[in-house]
Length: 443
Image 1: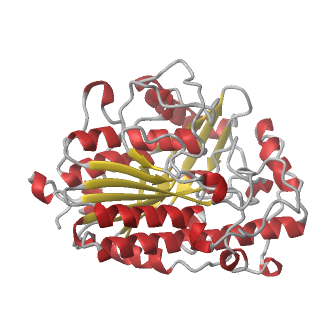
Image 2 (image 1 turned 180 degrees about the vertical axis):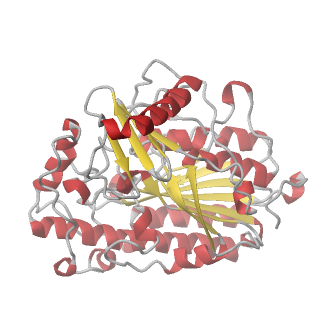
Image 3 (image 1 turned 60 degrees about the horizontal axis):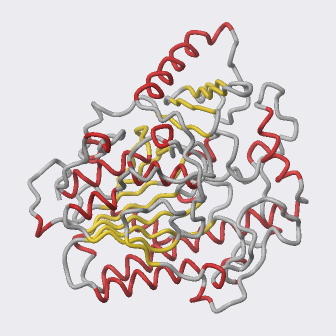
């Protein structure tokens, strides 16, 4: 299949399956983390598709990131400033749009309430999780990790995969857009035993402690550092070992989804997207989770795009891209006219990159959360905080983002250029109000 634009009739439009993990790091999927965990199904998918190594989420937390992804807009356009938010009622998602063009839009598993426009297939979350603490707050060494003690096939992520398979079995025909939300490796870190015990905690090497972060760092980063500091070394090793095992659980879910598509005769005409809503520090900078920072470990997400019969399988792209670029890409590859007017997309299609054309590639990407706004090029990263110390890092000489150059005379030219880029994107379209609400955590 050519990645160039072509005329696609309604009868031959491809199916689209989006598999979105939660809190999965890019380097774990690409086997660049200090500890390798098995990823056989994603390794196969990478050989069949294109892997985007520099994909960045638009905010390092679940709800705004997912809302940005499904609408193709920046969080500041939607009023999604933090985790306590909902999509404005007038916004339209890719579910609405593809359904209007003849697709059956359906969502399985975890959506965080950010999939209006999709018909939702739900399950009983309380009965399919191993613990009721769905975050990193108030953890102790005794509660940070554990084992799901129910039947393995009743674990939440496997339930979502089974529901997707049942959907395909009963689907008579016509194209579909399926969003399959995988809960793992987001807490609670209580997976089935074979994943919980996959990596002995005694073998885990902890990241550098970073207990003495430079004083130029934003003060609000003390909160996620406190979570890491509250655990013992054993507790920290158990967190990392369990997250690695749950990352392999995500890989198994991908294998089950592909197997279902093959078994029901849908694989040959399906675009499959694999990604995550954000990453996790896992001890980098002495932090646990993803809040109050714009470090690479939190913002950089895996993105694999597999096309039917694609001639470019096995390729890696180093181009800078944003998660909101996926929506316009799917429109172009499916022959669906992208939305216009108030629902126009902020992203740009990746189809030219798939064909090897980098002439219109991004030279920078953006992210934001609450009062912090980031712009990143291949060489530099600026994080401007309206309520705290701002940050500037040279990524070529300081990939660990330790040496904050913001405000130093020698970097004023770079700082000014990046601030102008930030002002431009924030001024393009902005919703001044915060769209607060209950976000349907278990959606």
